[in-house]
Image (tube, rainbow, N blue to C red):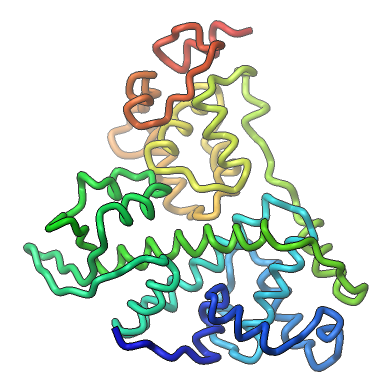
Length: 332
């Protein structure tokens, strides 16, 4: 495929690309340089990245003169803060921002950028089945690797269109895979970055992060004190600002409702998830609680069902129970 030449505007959209990183390196700037008044616009843009639980519309408007460096400065500040719970939030926001821009690119640019993001050989194609139109394909092995973190049944290989060792993908699907991969790469970059020495003039950026409220663990107030390993695992993921797969979220919601939590308690708890959408989440929680739809509360999945969904983390404390709710009743 013909190489696409990326410029400053592209780096502003996708500042986590290796080409963007190389571009910044060539500038030879230091943190002390950024203390100069001429970098005030970049610092303000960085503030917006750090203060927002969800990026405001202004961050979806390209500012090529400050977007690249404000991203780098934000990464440095987050690393210095040592707030690992903020890593996922920031990475999700950046990946979602990139996803929005990718959806507006032409096919040639999308293919090139996604190849850089996924580090995989992506084939362009045109294939229709009924109302479904597929524009991309990749090898099965690569797809399985990239979709491993996408726990929804939608992404399972058995639900994909395969032909001659290739998985067919719609444009929105491959962009979604790219979003998740970029999220992972941003988290990795922050974790692997050396802890910086922050100039006094920029220390307040680190304080913005450190002063953000810690994720609240609402589940600790529930009547059941000892949770089964399956519930602990899901709770830990939410507490670490990680997204839950669809069935995993259903299980945790149903379990917490049976454990005595209210809809509002669960809403507040799930609000720490990077992909939290209040309207959708409220509907789902109320539906599971029996307040919407058929007005019938859903039961908590049993251990056999959780095992089939790779959500069973049985240990010696389970005592051969067959249902998660038995754990809470037996352990006082």
